[in-house]
Image (cartoon, rainbow, N blue to C red; front, side, top):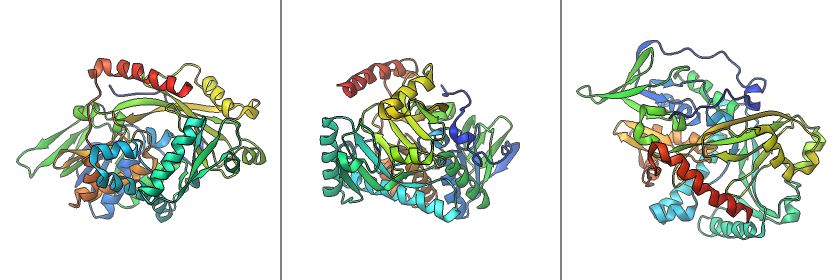
Amino acid sequence: MRPSFPAARSYYAATPGAPGRAPRAKLQGDRRADVAVVGGGIAGVSAALHLAKRGYRVALLEARLVGYGASGRSGGQTIFGLAASQKALKAQVGAEDARRLFDLSIEALDCTQALIAEYGIDCDYHANHVHVATKARHLRELAEWIDELHGEYGYTSARLLNRDELQAHVRSPRYLGGLIDSRSGHLHPLKYTQGLAHAAELAGVDIFEGTQALRYESRRGDAGGITVHTAHGAVHCAHLILCGNAYLGRVAPALARRILGVGTYIVASEPLQPDRARALMPSQAAIADINWILDYFRLSADHRLLFGGRVSYSALQPRHLAESMRKRMLRVFPSLADVTIDYAWGGFLDITMSRAPDFGRLEPNVFYLQGFSGHGMSLTGLAGKLVAEAVAGTAERFDVFARIPHRDFPGGALLRRPSLVAAMMYYRLRDLI
């Protein structure tokens, strides 16, 4: 089932200069390209851009609008590491590849900033991210985490903050301490995605919006060529890259069984007076707690509090979304009781069973990128670069990710969501204890 949300009345889409253009043309008729990319999020647009820079003719097919999905609706936090823990990755792929995966996650942060600088993308980037503790157990977990980062991975950009030091970044009675990383940060995700798309077009990529890929077929006897079919045309190509994630639908059923679209939600407050905003979050760092069902928040360029949290494993958007999210916001900042909510929206992110990203090949010339599991804001940009390297014949870095094992969600099409909803009750209770 293709996840769908009502048209998102998001702060990002309403930001002056963010949509910034009329919809692109739909694909009409047949077209030839070296590479077809399905999906106009960061991963797809980055893949198209990096391929075009290598001289490939690229056609990108987006079912709705560039940045429609998680890339344009997310919390906008660029964070080191993967959603799966390094300990879990070591168990799956061994210590050597786990180290490579961690190093690539750091390269992803650098890649994001390099793309912003190279193409002059106006996306309100701001450095610093803090993971915060809401209970004593979290303080112990953060201390173990920093020992792992410093001792096993030589990563010294992150450091611990005690409760007093945390006041320089977030002033809330809810938090006991934190772990700050100076290389992580936050940005306006829709402006970033659209900036990458504009750069890709300048590099020669043809982007078609309102053009859903319906199916693809390998053309045997034609040097392994591929045809991607849409409602009003087709792309004939030598390579195909699938970046539709939770929105890919029936194009690749084998991939759909390995990810699940999970609803996540954000609200944007009315603009605060600058002094009031700085009093709450003096350094303008992005913040996230380390509960399983976490809260995450940051300030926008126009001094709104963007506050995210909750998840829906049932694929149903919660009733009274703005009100319920406002209650979560007030647990963190009780002083905002007089502040109204201007925007409330949701969207789907794609998770895997292990929360590790799922990259690989369905055929020698059919690649896919999916399963970022909430850590995709920076990793998607690097993923596009890695898959472009693989198409060009240098797949060593791509294959580090491709070696991560993945399983289908249990329960089949009918039962996998109810099974996951039941399993998540345990983690909600764990957060409360």
